Image 1 (cartoon, rainbow, N blue to C red):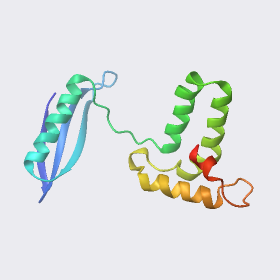
Image 2: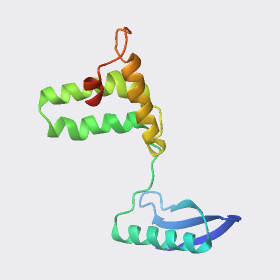
Image 3: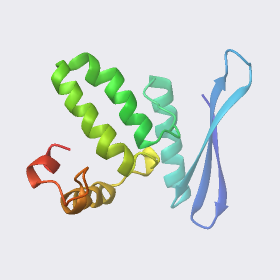
Image 4: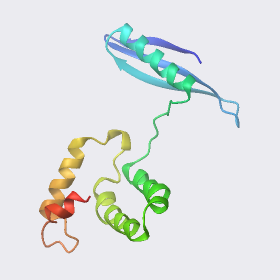
Length: 142
């Protein structure tokens, strides 16, 4: 695998990593990353990415939303690794609360502050009938 670095502006570097060719189309695949800091920081990040690619541990960031991830988690993990009653409970929580609140957020942008804000909203006004918040114990299970 190959890659190179180019300075974008003072303290900002672009890294291009060659990911080989798409087996179906034959088109060249690349990934571009931005590193803030010194050139040595960019070189270190390039070496790290190349090492991960060569070892098979590299996963290219996707534009998946939190909602898409939760749906996949319900389908691929919960449905096969939990009891039917547990799976139904998880599905209810995900579909009634989590996806409406956080579903449109890109998964890569999800921060602890989003989760804390969600908990606060659920405690204040999380009931489906609109008559107040959920109990702390119920929110704890989310």
